[in-house]
Length: 156
Image 1 (tube, rainbow, N blue to C red):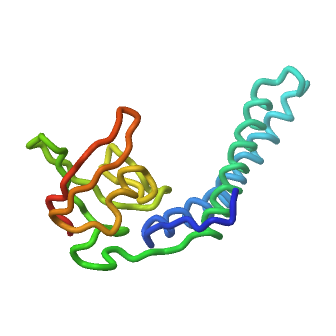
Image 2 (spheres, helix red, strand yellow; image 1 turned 90 degrees about the horizontal axis):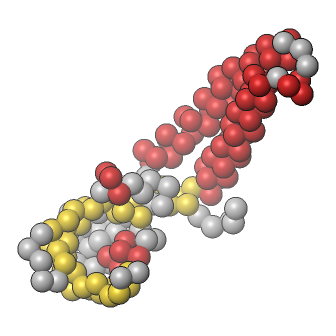
């Protein structure tokens, strides 16, 4: 991983710290017990339970390393720095040029992005294009299908 900051809300930071603590304590203990049991079954080279427990242990340790790095690099940003200007934590309603349909997104850090929940990363092409814009601004950004033009209907 790089030394780059990871922008997150306080809520996401707390969630990552809680998950990290859970993995380091409860989950590691459970995996150690599973490994011990699997070892007691005999020949490790043909022991599916042992292999599965080792794979789970490796995945858990990788997740712990990733979370430790994210927590270390986390920059906690409070919601709504400037009213009326798109920024981290803003809720933005936009409409595509030539369409009456509108779409609402919340601008979040890349670790929180979830398109199903309408949470858009501030570093995604659309998120980056929205940053620092105001209601009524028209903006264009590049997509795989070509340039798209949108108008900002609302910022809160």
